[in-house]
Amino acid sequence: MKTFDYEVKETLGLHARPAQQLSVFAKSCRSSIRISNANGQADLRDIITAMLLDVTQGQTVRFEVEGIDEDTAAEKLREHVERLL
Image 1: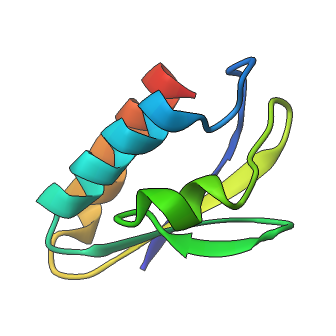
Image 2: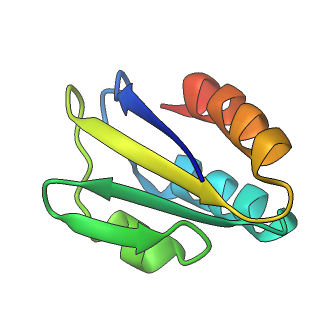
């Protein structure tokens, strides 16, 4: 399993557009990808549960990538997260 933490810089936090783009990315990976914060944990493939975490600017979130392509998926996920959040 690969994990990394990220402090959200996006003013609106994890809102619909980045949540949708991250969900599409997660669905393209063979590994499972989870996002978590103080409010709980969600499968990143499920845009609704990810948005229900209420991720806001300044919060630190953790991403967990586990599966057959976890090395590549975690690296690409980090790139997406840094661009979107």
